[in-house]
Image (cartoon, rainbow, N blue to C red; front, side):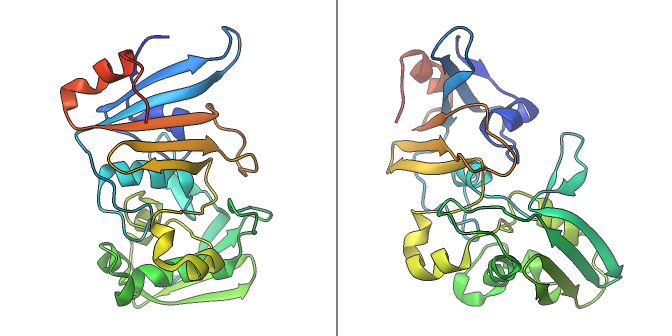
Length: 252
């Protein structure tokens, strides 16, 4: 199969269920046989040569976001019609104008084998709000007054006043609201930047500074197996060189 350029919705199904990628995302799929699904997606990220972190609370660059979208999930997400739908939450509802309740999916696993709980959700959102995290998205969640966890699979977000954009911010893939495992973050500290642990369709397999990243499908992903077993994402500084690099077999 020759090199192709995916639009945002096509890339959604190829890289991760929650991911949307721009037109500059150049990709080439390879299959092990003519009948089997492609086992490798080589996707050149053009215009960038540096990645600093894969911590969703700290990302600032698009290449970092591409990996975050594939490795992590949020409570809710946008579907192909740009409607907000459940993701890690199986349902959500407003109890009153300032209280938004989420019921979490049961049995969702992080890449380290631990199970998602409401404590992880509370920790993740409070971490964005914590000044010590220095999240670039802190202001976007400043409407949150407190977060309650009545049980292991229920989360209640209480705002200072009615705040209509809250669900949009929670669904937006660039607001740092993806859920991280509390124990892993506390254990790894700053090392979490380079060793992300999420619930997403892909796990970070390899990161070569200045070269790119390689992702591997997560076998226990709650939403089913992704379309590709491996995704190789080389960083290409020149926008015009992306397709040429893929045609030449460029990987990380």
